[in-house]
Length: 113
Length: 112
Image (cartoon, rainbow over all chains, first blue to last red; front, side, top):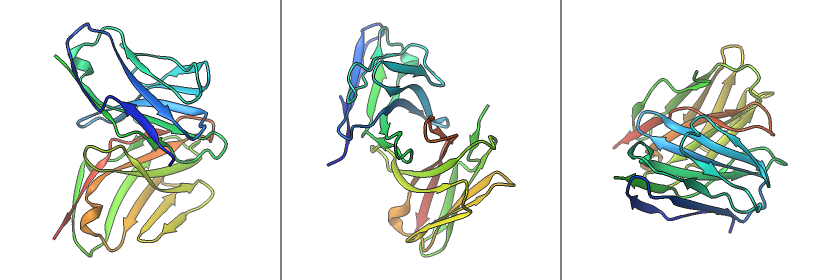
């Protein structure tokens, strides 16, 4: 089954404690990205990657890091989380060959206290 | 600078009637437009798309209309069903090698 898997689904952490949210896709997609969803702001892109070892900033990259060492994985790293990073995070992937829709993960609800 | 705008945060429609969700965009270079549906506690799922070379695409109860001169697209759901209650995101991409840009979403409530 084609899917994008994020872990964890829920996370409560304290300010400043480094964390990583993992994302993995099994569709051999070149393109992967991270979004955050906040009330009234919709989906905002954090980072994206066009292929292995190629990453670019999205609209709201501050406070986040990503890496793309393998095609299937695209982890989101918060080196020093702050309360304003409390949000719902989605990972997505799509094929640059077909260039159409993106598949989304189930989401990670992060709370930073 | 919002390139994809959904100006209605919410919409309520009677079950069985037509739901029309609207979306405006500013970038005339957008090549492909998509609609996503999102239920609470789930990731967005792809619903329907349209290429800029077309003005209409239909898939069952869902039809997307594109008016390039007005930089406007709309999603029609006929007839509306209770399971259609969700947040709908309009999205666009400049070309197949570029990122998808999302609107803020419209929450659709289907009333019994």
